Image (cartoon, rainbow, N blue to C red; front, side, top):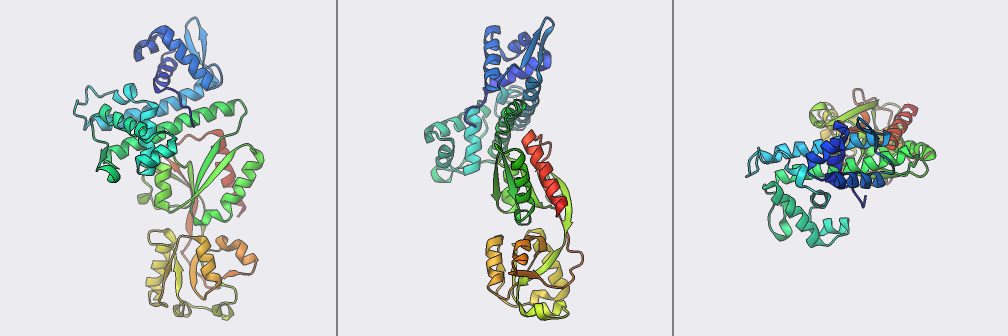
Length: 404
């Protein structure tokens, strides 16, 4: 989003929506009545129509205004929460810092620190924002001075965010995302479904669920865009937490691993030992775990649900003594290539090889693996409020999962 609304205008609008008085809102943010009217007019231009109905008893939000008010409240709440945490460490003291971010932070400040957090350098942040590096660095440092708490540490090429900086960068990213979604809400209200949804995908979801859901969703909303982001669970859940992706599809985690996120289970998916077609074990009329020990494995990295299941099976059946030369990968492309061209074994969902099995390249062994089912589902941020497009894609994912 290249043009965000002015944060002071958003704050003014939110006061007016809550108090039903533009006069009181102007007093609260310390601007004149004419300036307040101009600010609302500018917001109405940005969001495509009237935000208030003006009556004798005050101002009342229109449907467009209600949508913006919901997003504005969420954005300002994020700033207040960050402000409270920042104030605990601010040298000017908590009493003076109670609304520091709300009153002094600007979109330029938030974009600078959020871009730095995402790219890990001012040079890369400047490229992402299409701005000069000194401008980005100056904006980030201004935010640091406003809060009177160090947001950065290190020197030159080793500059990094402090713990407080990381906290504030996350809040900044989510504030920006709420404002982006506010604009999407307004466009959708006008029947313009031209927004973009970003989905993070773990290995299982990439083969069937996500492609099938997107085909169905884009058939209904041909002007909408979608970006599919692959990566490890840790990388994707971090991107989810700061608003860089909207939802994550794949194997769910235990409650202890799922702090700060919401998980929706779609189904349980059992695992199989998968090999190439024509593998020596395919000809065996009966198989046992003893038969697997002569062959090396390809496995996902430690820390994944499938690897945890394998480690448990290995300990129980002596598979840790299987052939040498273990290969670890999170790439389905590499995994499939290794399987097709070797006698290696892997542990994975049969649904992940649906196309290869139909084509006669890979197949599951006829070996029962009880108690290996993993919950597959959708992961989102706690308290996330989807746009219409995002909600429709969620429904498409649920329908695709039921069809498996």
